[in-house]
Amino acid sequence: ALVDETGQNSLADLRSFQDWYLRYWLSSVKGVAEVASVGGYVKQYQVEINPASLLAYNITLEKVMHAIRKSNKDVGGRVVEWSEAEYMVRGRGYIKSISDIEKIAVGVDENGTPVLIRDLGTVQLGPDIRRGLAELDGKGEAVGGIVIMRYGENALRVIDHVKERLKEIEPSLPPGVKIVTTYDRSVLIKSAIDTLKRKLTEEMLVVSLVIMFFLWHLRSALIPIFTLPIAVILSFIPMSMMGLTSNIMSLGGIAIAIGAMVDSSIVMIENAHKHIERWKEGGRKENYDNVMIKAAQETGRPIFFALLVIAVAFIPIFVLEAQEGRLFKPLAFTKNFAMAFAAILAVTLVPALMVIFIREKRYEFKSKWFTRIANFFAGGKIYSEEEHPVSRVLFRIYEPAVRWIIDRRKRVITAAGLLIVLTLPLFGRLGTEFMPPLWEGSFLYMPTALPGISIEKAKEVLNQQDKIIKSFPEVESVFGKAGRARTPTDPAPLSMFETVVVLKPHDQWRKGMTVEKLKAEMDAALQFPGMPNIWWMPIQTRTEMLATGIRSAVGVKVLGKDLESIEQAATEIETLLRPL
Image (cartoon, rainbow, N blue to C red; front, side, top):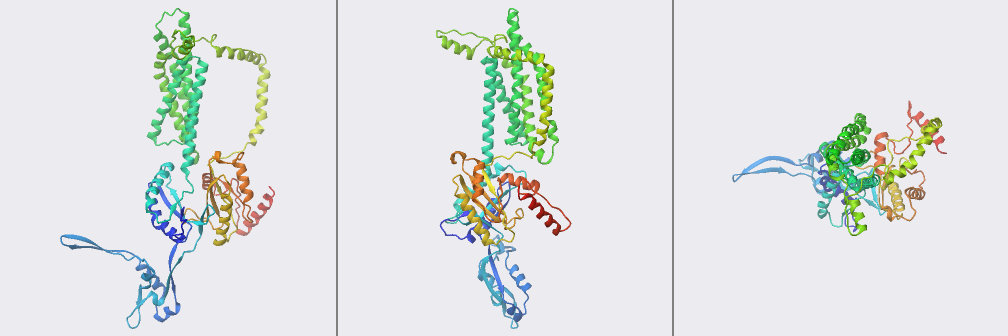
């Protein structure tokens, strides 16, 4: 939004700067399709013609319009050679002032005297008819610009380029004018990706700790701990080659694959421990490295193909089309990349690490405490299943449980079957939706006024609504729009309001405040007669409107032969749904 708190520039001045300078600067940014202007006043040269003068000079109105149109353009005159150089000839004829229009010749009178526009009427500056307006933070009208991205572009990259261009433009702004960002989608994108990356790191750490706990041998646990991040990092190479970006779905595919990726290393390590146990019982006659190689050969091949089978299970996702395909294909790609690299590492890197790390060493120091720490981290005993402290506890629980189930197998199977039957009615009652809503950190408040509301009344109501919303301590900024922006992509009537409510970080909210409570409080405070409230989020709203054309989660489309029958059916439906 363009604002001027000093009062040096009017709304008309701000709109002119937006339309003739800022819009073109931002439109040149790579990935930007259009910059739509909204709010303020569009300046017009208004020519008021006196019909009596037209009759007196025998000039038609069409001739006047044609003369003005011809007088408002630049023309080229090729070049002129002068002193061994050529110079471009150019006629600069764009209208710059009221007097330029007044001096346009339309024709001649009986005496051959030119008839000018000022002889036929008056010329003045005035605003164009307004079908939309913008408001910021309940402080009054502002001029807004909506940057529309090209289809298929990277949103984060385009937003960053727009921000860079705005920084370049700032020194060129008129005195007193400043640009205020009212909605920045990159905040949500970066927050979501950072959260997922953090959770991915935490997941890898938790998996590593669990591996360490159940293997009870630190040097062995280092093998899956090393191979896991390597497989994840390698999966980014084909992602880059295919043009896939780091987004929620692509990183989610890696998160799903982590559990299966470490299985191969764990199985190979467990098998190596078994071979070491037999090697000890056989008197340690064979070379230790050969024992490790045989253990790897025994399980490497089946594990390699098992991981590939898991990857193949995601192939049907690649045949999805339209929205479903665009949504889930990045997830399937990254998961299969991660699984493929995990399978390759299972037969290459893991055996090499097994030979290096799976060894028993005993260190002795004067300090018993230091000896224990050194043996745990740098050496450590490889326990058999009977000696393993964790396995012993699990076996004590598992064996009696399995025996009890086997002894009562018919009852257990019957109970499991009944449980499945009982869940069928619950499954039928589950709701369905295309995708769960993502908390975007902002609201889109979309009330609808009665058709035919005037521009002045819309301005008054929008200002009151924005003041109420801005009064909540959780609100960072409020940018309201009534009607349409000057673009074919926004055919909204004047009765349609859209207010973007950007909220502060959750740690700055009132104690005990939740999203639902805040929405309920705002809804209760914004009860305007004849204006039902609709609360959504910006991206969610655009997604639903593009998919269904409806601005709410549930909508009713009424089709009929004529408008009268459609209106009658819609009124009956409204009467039935009102009590709900």
